[in-house]
Length: 316
Image (cartoon, rainbow, N blue to C red; front, side, top):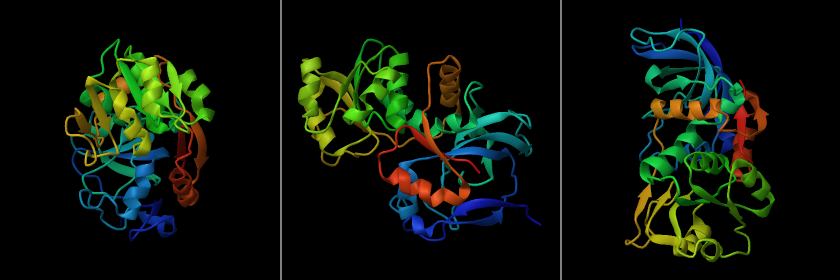
């Protein structure tokens, strides 16, 4: 008889009204997998996109599906050949699988141990759960795709959100000059995280404002906002510079732009790099609010406003 756990789940695509909370089976452990007790699961805008069915053309969903891709928790059990972590180890992970079904808005998750990294010791479970998706997105965008180097400049669009706040810190840790774009009320917050310059997208031509600071333009634009802000920013990209976006897939961009679209992938080696930076005191996570599993729909509604400062987290 399968063991049971409490989880948030949905049985058809739609809005947050499709979210149910109840008992579901804990999946059986298979070779190379571990059972993790979920201590915290961060919420991300992409969770709503998956729920709505917008990504199903390349990311199949099997119902009933549990939302959530970010986790911090404790190893409870291990299957055959899963020996990198001991029972009781504190871990964190970006838990997106090739098929969406077993997510992190639950009391437990079964996951290949290859996805896991050690949780930063100096962060709470809530803070640690806020790193994987946004941290890996920023890292893979700026360093794997953008090849950001010490002494270079990076313009971060959407710099006060979950991805942007990690992006500011990672870029500064790498020795880059950072320009953060967000509404005026978040400028002090971005400066605290290390932004050298801040620009308000309201009533401002972002590209023009950047060129006043860097007449030659910037080396990298990291786009986590898209829309009009991105279009304005293009004039501030050096001819030799690169644009990396997590939202725009290039359809409306000039083909002469050195451009790459990034959809974040699990990478436990890079999670260990982020852990080291966090433990060195160079990576901070701002958790603005926590929710219970019963409040999963509310948490998804909040993230959909796109006005979340830092991260919001579900604590089962």
